[in-house]
Length: 167
Image 1: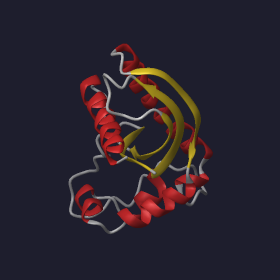
Image 2 (image 1 turned 90 degrees about the vertical axis):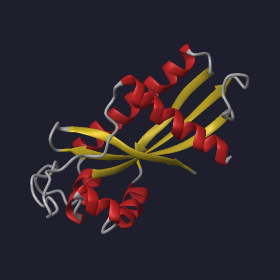
Image 3 (image 1 turned 60 degrees about the vertical axis):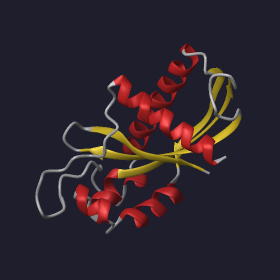
Image 4 (image 1 turned 180 degrees about the horizontal axis):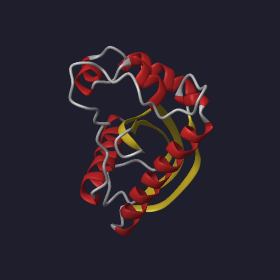
């Protein structure tokens, strides 16, 4: 199971690097202070989960990323079949990951303040089925539950994939 998770994460990462897709964490201005203004949220929203527009554009970015990855895997003959079954914002995982990242060394390095994370950070839950060619891919076929951590890049006004994990 650990090999499957590692292989899928590695494959996603390699695909985005080779395809030229930006999957780097949001880059905030180089200062010693965390960015505290210019959030993506619509007026009156407390966090990204409360903003329907933020959620929809984040889901669209995640969906495009997953579909592009599996189309590439099909072309290489590694995947025989792929079906995306459900894609949605997971509020519980979003809150859990904001708590995990807030105040962390990574957050300090990336200049992610807690308000920035609350307003520009979402976790997308993707449920899909895949059948792999066992001679070309080490991944196990079956139902897959994949979480994609996304942040909103204020400089280029787009959601970007920061990390992912499976459960």
